[in-house]
Structure formats: C-alpha cells, structure tokens
Length: 396
Figure (cartoon, rainbow, N blue to C red):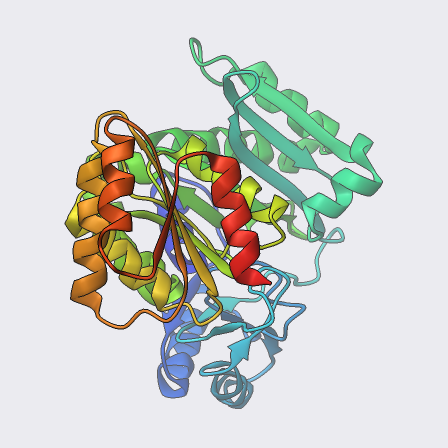
C-alpha cells in the first residue's frame, strides 16, 4: 500500500527520524495558516509547497515550488491544488492534486554547504534479507544513478537473525564521506529509519533526498513509504492511511470483490485462476498478436459470482476488444466455471466483445459442452494453443 509523503513523514517522526517539518492543507487558505504555524514553530520565512500524489518526480512535473512569502504560499497552492500533475510515474494522464504539504525551508546558509544523499531500505529477495542502499547522489532518480554510475550506490545487507549492527550504520556514514556531528547524526538517522521500516512491516522506505543541513543536521526532506498489504491486519492505524482516490477505480472495485486485478494498456482482457497461469496467459496473448489489458486472478475458488464480477470490471475498460478466460480445474471444477460464465453473460446482458473460454483439468470436456450448447457468442478451447489462435482471429 502506497501512502503520501506527509503520512510517511508522520511515521518517521514517530520513530525518531528527523524530518523536514510540514503541515498538509487542502485549500489555499489552510496553506497560508499552515505556513504561519510553521513560522511560529520553526522560525522559517521561506516555505516549500509540495503536491501530494502517489508518484515520484513531482518537482520536474511542476508540483514542488518555493514560496518566499505568505502571498506566494497562497498563489502557488492555488496553482498546484486541482492541477493534473504529470510525472514519469503517473503516465500521460497524470494525477489530480487534492492536497499540498507546506514545509519549512531547510536549505538555509550556514557554516557549510547543504549536501543531499539517498537512503533506501527494501527486501532483497535473492538474498532473503533486508538491504540498505545509500548514495552520495541524492536528489536524483536512483535508477539513473544505478544505470550510469553504479559504483556510487552503497549496499549493506542486514542479517535478519541479529538485525542492524552499529558497525554497519557507521560503515554507511563513512562511505558517504561524513564526519563529525553530521557523521554521528547520520548513524542515528539510519538506526531510527531501519527501526521504523521493520516495526511498520514496510516493503520499501526511500528517502530522497536525505539532507545534511548547513549546520550539520541530518533530516529527511522527502519520504516514500510502501507498506506490505499482507501485514496491515497488524497495523490498523496504518491501514487507515489508504487513499483510494490515488488508486485505479477498477482496482479498488476488484479488491472489494476479492479479485486480484491490475489494469494494463492492452486490448485483450484476461480472467484466470492462479497468478502463474495469469502470467502465462498474458504471454500467450502477446504471442497471438494482442496486448494484455489487465492481470486478473479470480483465485482457486472461482464461481459464478466472482466470474461475473471479473466480467463487469474487464468490460469497463474501453480498450478491451476481446476477453480470454483461462481456467485450470484443480480445486474448482471446469463445468462449474462454465456454468458461471453462462450465468454471468446472461446477467450482464449485451456483451459486444468476443469471449474465448479455455478450460482444462477436472471436467474440462463437460465445461466445454456447456459453453457450446449455451447459444451465446462464446468460443471454447481446451488446448492453450487453440485459445491463442482464436484470440488472434478475433483481433484480425
């Protein structure tokens, strides 16, 4: 589950991670009040107005602006709120901005130049343990740094049996070239960040940039946090941070029906039971000359109700030109799925796109017979190759 920057910073602060202070607002007037409160609490006279959407690259898209007065705060907030912010992570359609975060200015002059770093924590699945990644190239896309200058990325793996050790945090701080007060503060920062990561059952913490201020403090200027959906039952407070306005409406609807659905950009909708079979089905669609319009796993207990819900969700995508249903009858019998397809078809009414149903496994032949005798515009197949050929034919 993704959350907003302001929510992520609230979590970090709770676990003792130093952050750039800020207050969220949903209209220009509240933004000005937030700026006044920040001035009273931190003494800042300049402010940063930051769009709050579930995507990176907000600055490049025009969603992060520096305000040098309260009038600027109001004007810039008015510009950003309601805008359709397009970044490299949103796609060309962008995302509408509903909230802005008003933050203190932390790039003030002092005894040394401010310096930006990158710090991230995630699970290294290949090694079976968490890895802390750091870089002196803060403020940049870490993917670009990894591609062009991989030697500038520092990695430290944490043994899950003993946890993060002091020498590891110091090793990272040394590798970043820090010394004195900044070095000590970075070590504390890493410890607190890792504790927050583990305690919240997160799948990703990314702080870009981590700033060494001109007075040698280490603070999180930005924060991207992904929480593990499967662990949210242990964190009721974190589950409440979900913002469904930032999610695809079809994916939200699918979740309510107990379906695993991810919208894609293709023209062939697919409905499958099992994630592995779904991936294979998407490959077959591409080999047949089409492009998958979605990933949809109805689970091992597919029935008429789940099939109908899947149909309705797929048909809401205007790009879908055909639907391929690929069911392996193991736990679920193919004849029951076939009956579910026929029942769902009748309940929905007019369906203008061709439907290919491939059934294999328990009672596959009985299922194919039900489809063929239904009188509906549904083609059946048993061999996956035949299903792919029928997809190709309806797309031509």
